[in-house]
Length: 450
Image (cartoon, rainbow, N blue to C red; front, side, top):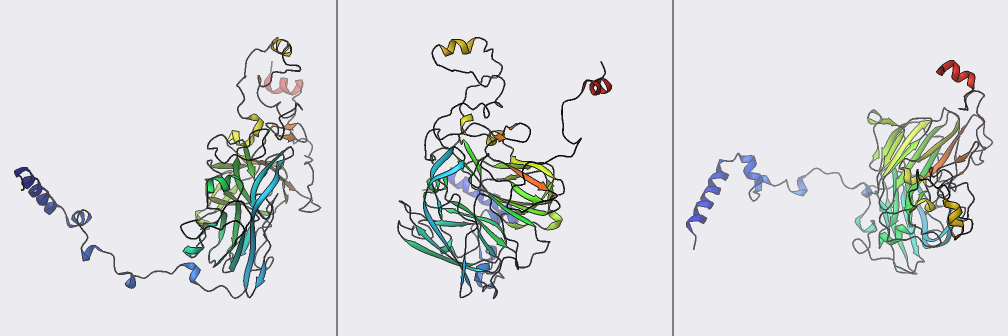
């Protein structure tokens, strides 16, 4: 039975709806034939790019592109079989991966390395990738950012059955896109990505619109929790990461970028860290942001930066002309991302008065020394013992003093003269009068007075 209240409320609602303009009524009422989109068969739509046939000529290094360089890593080899590029990834334990001298860990990776090798192809190539699972757990590989058939996307349980230990699966697709992408485990990914199952996937344009780079570097950014004294990264960590890496290495384990003066340089960054974005900063030059993981940015829309933010799960590509010789720092500008594991969890002693404290403490602990009351710069160079399988908080020796940075840090070495890109040229010899140094008394009196 309808009550008077229900009758009035319903009538008011009906009257209100009738008073609405036609557009508003359509948004609040069941769709009619007039409000539906046209039938799919009549819509003009582009089919997915992977449905296009592959280009008749597989891309070749040197001819179609300048090969990328993955410092501290490698590029995945391939062979051509009936016009298809064939790759093979082996998911396996990587015992004692070295993050930096003094710090190793038992990780998981591909083809015996952390991170996996960079896969590099050309737009229009057809690829066939075999994945062999030698892990004690099931796994899959997700091709992050690629446009491909749903069943090749590599999400365990959703688009495929997981690859059981001992099995080999085949992924095959044609790629008509260009840019910087990634691949990673997508089965128990919290564990498997935290242990190192990541890699980069580069697709060069078939017909590049701009000049080719002389140097094309690839960097995968990641973060780890390795408790000092242990040998296995902790996949359950959510906030306290103490090893921050470029291509699976932290400084002083990172290799320098060696560049001729006036080289056109491209650097591709991918971020598969568990939780943190990374603002990557470069000294001495400015670069142009030329690509995101969505593809190439039109030249009219590019912008200059000295710091590029690489969000979690994203890639960014930058380019610059290396016209300023020297040893230049490149690092994450999150200040705690340029320190290593022994700097985490320390008490704050800045500014305390430690007079007499060491003498008292040595009665209980032989050789005790208070550290950190004037900052952390001394931590790396004191030569004190650290726990087994751990490294000091910061750095390595530079040409003038100790470099007080670790973690996500490396050096870019721009030189007028080089023996080879593969040979470290040593430290930069600055021209006379171009190095900051102690001011003389005469200079201070002349300029500062007093």
